[in-house]
Image (cartoon, rainbow, N blue to C red; front, side):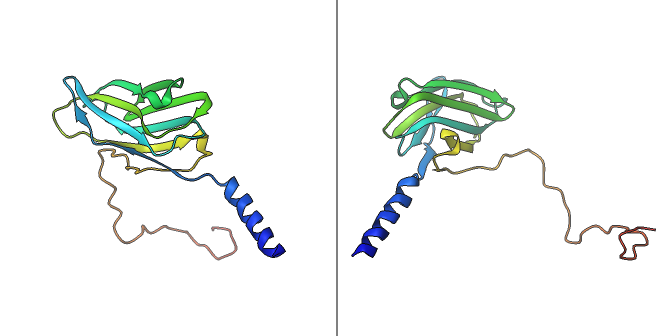
Length: 166
């Protein structure tokens, strides 16, 4: 009986120290007169004080019109900035709130053609809470280098194994 009790206490302490992974995703865009609105969603916002989101976005093709925090983030400070092809969004607050659902909306100008918008990085509480999201690889517009199947040969000189090249 004592062994079972100790095992249960040990398991509870381990489980208590581990945060459950959260899930963040983006809904399909909805069209408005001005542009396209992408809703950013989370399944559990409890204990979250800060969220950082980097979205891959071609601001030349479709400029960002607005980033809006939603009611779940009442009292949060929201900062957003486009750097190159990345839209950076930071939301923070001193006291955590709970809930789930849409935490922000990103509105971009409707380019009239398909545009890429997807997660590059998401962190909760500076990485203290695990988060799962569908990451997309940045498209640099360049083809990968053709390296072939054989590695390049390297002239090693007269190497005799002593560590000194003649």
